[in-house]
Length: 210
Image: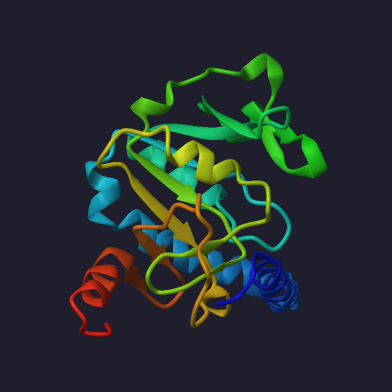
């Protein structure tokens, strides 16, 4: 059995490897792949059923979310974006009406709601969350950036909410070792496919290996 320090070191190694692969994508590749991911995400039945969503504001080489957010607003969704609170590593969903006007670079340059444009929405009203991350496996285990913000936030949501990871194919790996407090994803959307992590977990429990 591996020690906690060994698992920690494994996660750090995987984080470095996947981030390095992602950073090698040029801007044109990020733009094209992100557009394909947004198109797949906007066609999801889970999104069609959701009234209120939260989508992260993309930063650097993450899957870009501006097109997805625009599509959700055009579809009449209540769209929120996260305001992070470093003091307790929490997230406040804040409604956006105009992404360009409502959001600006904040901590570490990551776009967040402007203080004067905050429109807080209770977490229990959020039906669906688009989640960022570094690496994911097919059963929905997620390797984040190490802050734990999203794991804390997802635990506040009502039963039945949907957590959807947006990732490039190069971020989908064979296995991510989950931590005790980690929350798995329900779906992963890449530029090539939609992975139903719920089905993969059910198959594993049933011993099918799928």
